[in-house]
Image (cartoon, rainbow, N blue to C red):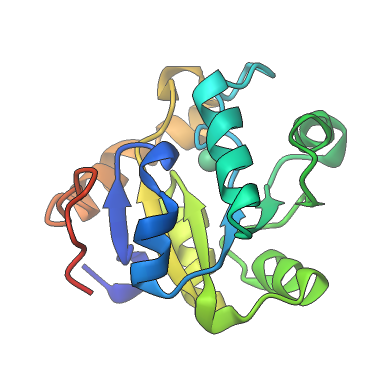
Length: 173
Ligand SMILES: [Mg+2]
């Protein structure tokens, strides 16, 4: 697989990204995709496990910023509910949204990871921005718009050789 599409780490859910894992990876800031990463595309509802996970990372001092391709009017309520900063209309896979978030939050790009559910937006944007990338399985992908669903079989093909890391397993990085 071309490295531009290769996530550094593949997990099933964001909740698997715990502080112990981040410490081992020397990461202390996360850029978070919103749709299908934190919540289903057509829902504004956040799972309690995701809200709790955000709260836990915040208490541990992990920097957090949402980076979404969604329009601000649609994504901002989620940012407000989670009390997180937001870069909306980020135009991933272009790296500008990631870079803007890193600059605004004064994150160290060497210690920042992009977390998302799509190779062709999140992983590619993170790669182009030169940061660590974590791919998670999409939440309820059947709700996505047709142009996203079209890309899913290609994405599954490209990541077929990248194993999921189950919770607790040491990443080989
Ligand atoms: Mg997404």
